[in-house]
Image (cartoon, rainbow, N blue to C red; front, top):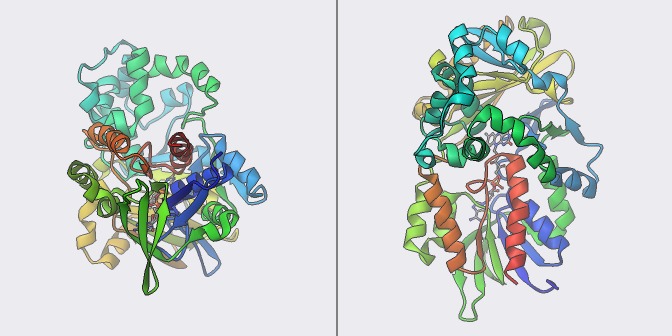
Length: 459
Ligand SMILES: Cc1cc2nc3c(=O)[nH]c(=O)nc-3n(C[C@H](O)[C@H](O)[C@H](O)COP(=O)(O)OP(=O)(O)OC[C@H]3O[C@@H](n4cnc5c(N)ncnc54)[C@H](O)[C@@H]3O)c2cc1C
């Protein structure tokens, strides 16, 4: 029986709230402490002039059945929405033209996104041998070796910008794309591995990211964290900044936080951290010098999110997709754009169209040194040209994430191993959050289940 075991969860992003929710269900005495006045962390939705703007994630992928369980438990069936069928079509910019990303072998053969040479190169993939040095390989090296350089430049480079706001030359294939890495390790190749692993995934009730359905909520992504928080009621404290975590002589932990003018301390049998690595270092660094090095080494590049609304009639480009991504080779000043009002309802009325642009990331982290308005103007002008928009924006809004998304760069496996080691040495402290086990909303939800199991196994 877990009743009475006190668990303090630091951070009310989707990682912290999901874990708190699961632990609360198991009768742990849970308290969530959140620095900001609102819950959700990177999940932020606002409404401006009747336009719904998701300033962090625009959607999630339903890679775990826990998402449906949450929707049901929280009575969110009326709010939950899958992306409409247009969401399956994604464009890539090549030579200033938008090309649909081919999603089937016949479409791939017909596509003008890749040259005939690149298509032939792809067919060699099953015959490419394994790398001896896979552990420390970048996704760029992995893909060039298996699929060729053109596939790296026009498929993986933009894809990586879309997921991590990252660069394939820097991201570790093992840590950032563990499933892809495992296909080579276990089956010897991507194509053969994708076919053979289907049965295994079915058994584990897992859905691959390629086939998982994209979801959001009628009132935006914030609906989920807000509903979890509501369910937890007064167990969630917002506007409280955790200042320190210290072990007591009895072996449990004192968590001190600032609430208004006063500093308060909660005693906990276990502490679950779900705050970013660069914040966790302040709270847990004093336990272990080596941990400081590992947490400090994780790079979070900045991302500027720009939200634009136009009169639909002024847009010549057919609005029949999720949006488009831009390969680095195209030398544009933004990473890509999501056609937000095309894929989910309730973002604008029918006469308008809303778009979310992403600027910066690891590809262009230096943009923050420029004047923000000129950065936005440049991206907007380029966007309007690609989309052949003749009208002026009806609405412009922005959100700068100074440290947006952790980059699982080459050598990340050493950080991952050290975090495991730290948790073994410091029983009762769990390091969770999106710098472990995946950055997507779906991964964070799935990992919260593992983290909750780790807490249970402590007692
Ligand atoms: C711009 C952007 C776009 C994205 N787009 C997508 C997308 O489309 N799809 C997708 O799947 N994923 C996307 N992601 C990634 C995904 O949103 C995040 O990885 C995920 O939401 C992180 O959740 P988390 O709970 O681990 O961390 P966070 O959301 O960062 O939550 C951590 C919380 O800890 C709090 N905190 C920090 N320090 C303290 C302290 N000392 N005391 C108390 N509280 C503290 C913070 O205020 C925060 O609320 C995007 C991320 C960003 C930034």
